[in-house]
Length: 302
Image (tube, rainbow, N blue to C red):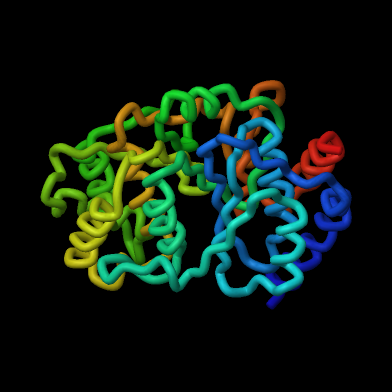
């Protein structure tokens, strides 16, 4: 109860500081671009999404904006988004389901990407992200049709699934109490049929790019189905979709881990170097940096 009240107060304070975004000019869709910018969105994050998508598309040639409606968007929300983005397309959760995958927890988002990636370069962008400056690495990935993921530490690269499984197994074996799904899944990677041939990365699904035709739905169904067989309902917990997303990117041709902390979360910002920030829950509204930076870059949009 107290957390909810505090979160609501912080959100209101943030929205007041960044209300200029509501009067900013519409984001333009670039004709001829096959870049799809997708976000899964809930009602309370609409203004955050305006900021995230507009500051990002100011530096990247987006051909179409795609909104996965979690079911809470109102008709007013949809009209507002339609006014702020050219070539905006809305998707429903019900249209993206698989008997091999959990329901909820952003799995519908990943399955929507699997459909869109057949003909497009797809970028998944969380609403709580902010672009501060030019993104040359993203432009290069698009031009080279390389998938990418935002990492979690400096000089990070892909690793063998075997290596990650061994490390996670040690952690799981020495832990007491309930394990997070990420550790549980990673420690059981050896149960996957092609375990020794696969790679992995501890990235974040909040900002990920998927090259055109870089993977297909069958890969998701195969891996997720095996994890369901191994872990049962544990695989249905929040966070399993991120594990799957990381597996996908790590096993695409020429996949790329974005340089850190040039691209980072809000606990690791480096002034003068960071150009893209993911404002994860632990530090999203706890200090004023999100509102301060968001206000600055949205005012620059005009």
